Length: 144
Image 1 (cartoon, one colour):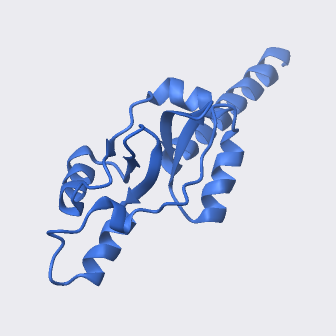
Image 2 (cartoon, one colour):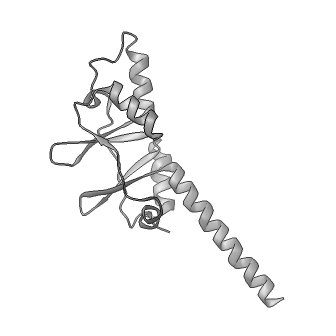
């Protein structure tokens, strides 16, 4: 199973912000949309970074005086790992585990085509295992 199949099921919508978006606004987006991260896009519509819930929490802890002026570009992770539609869910899970992150932008020919989360990957693996179990049961009962 590949990331393309995950994106077909969940959709390709991506929530993004600009590098100058205030962290306070990002926190509001993350909370209201019930998502774990937003992508930071540069003026050429390329991924410049990612801001996760974890990044926002770190910023709050580091700035007890508040986040009023803090911008996405100041807290975002710049070294963003990517998947492609052809990446398998096992490869994506391994990338997330090794990098200790939970969101993975998906690029095709350099263009952003979606984003997946660890939840999406786990859900896909569970569905695949359930399908395989159903096939085995059908096979067993069909021959018996």
